[in-house]
Length: 304
Image 1 (cartoon, rainbow, N blue to C red):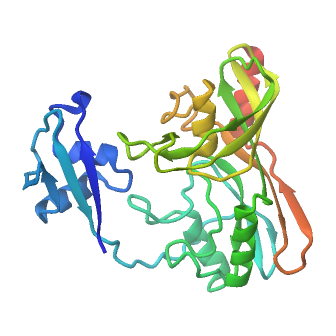
Image 2 (image 1 turned 180 degrees about the vertical axis):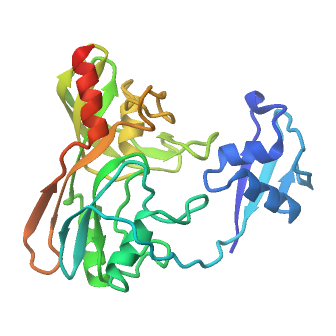
């Protein structure tokens, strides 16, 4: 069944082309994809079909009907993997900055899933379908570090239960902007989709889920801080949203903060992961050293 998204045009978008406005406000749609929907009559403005060069007015109601995605198989690709641990049930991978976890609009190849399919063959859980085989949890494209992949459905379910029960250890390190008055604390603030920008998440009480992030400052550098963070929950963009919410956006985060010269995207690394092995019942914990880009930023801050 198709999903329909309703958007109300605010004053700052008045005069915008319909295709650009929709692609800016619905994360999963590119501009060309929007144009295709317009041609099929699936985009309405105030209840009427429009052309792709339609200019919007403040107060317009835009209705976008998004068809169900067509089935697509991810293709195995011979891409090197930094494997931290592997057995018959799971694999722990150190993902580099810039790699997308699974295929999606605009990124059908070169993803972690493409690499895993080549390495593991058919030995990945099928719970999340053909696009996300084995993927128990995700980290953003420009976040580096550890994530766990399930090789069978039984392991996937047990690992997912740990995440849901908040017994799954996930620690990150980041460089954040600004001077922290409190060197440790907890951000307990619900996160949901931004109502005016569908590509962003935000702290909100509307259509949101509880989100808790614990932080401690490792070192301060005047206007920047090297911070350790522990996730109690795992919402989309949680650390980035929470740090921005308390006035300390992640350095280089061009969505919730601002770009930083010399790096692409946020300076955020998934440093530690811990879990109970789904078969042996043993608690296992793994750490990843800071990648070169992160270490180079700390070195630059030391000289400031």
